[in-house]
Length: 305
Image 1 (cartoon, helix red, strand yellow):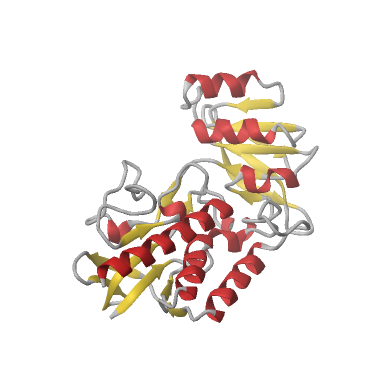
Image 2: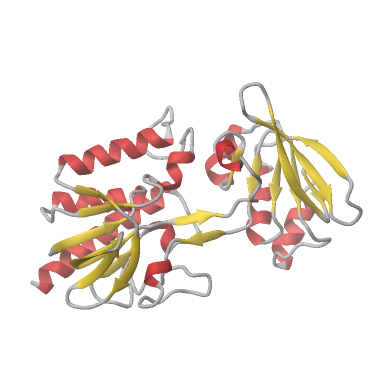
């Protein structure tokens, strides 16, 4: 019987591990298919407090891991396959059931990419899903955003602060975004829409960084090359909530619904970070929610006992 199991090892999960370990709860942290989460695909992080010169994403995750381990957190590699709420709660991990009094779900969300073969090796090398995270690295150079919804328009507008030009590539002839977001993006002289088109491939330089994209016009099938320094993909995220959806309340997109603080609809089960947050999706906000979930779990366990 565990007191607390933490699902996920991104900023939310590791911060929760630090706090619950310092509270002498000896948390068991489950590492899934992508230990460290999305931050491990980021080469440089410049907006996390305490690092004025920036820090590599994997290094930041490793430091958090060491800090949690120092205070007594324990680790197990395993993929959660099923969940049963009860007293105790049960998690099925790699075919085996585990019991715990409380759970902090910090399994994050996976950004959707275009699906081009070999795409994964370019993530962090001119291919990203976060303008807020990486936009400042591309000052005075052309970039492109793929997508046509509110997120794509918001990312494109944000990138105009840095990039010389922002090409907005969308497979239709009008944006799906809300009128106010679409009008704002299209009115910006730095944003140049490329309609009825899709990215079919990437061009790279000698260092393996993105230097351009192959663009296909979906109306006439013509191909062209577009010279840019970074591709920002804004076609959505998929929260990693599959095993929990049968028991926990989610919104229409599958994100866990927090019922005051980080609590879910099941007592003793808490959600932190991108698994519940589809608005900010930042390392520091995920860490803050991990802290909150740990404190709430600690207090819930005190009442439980």
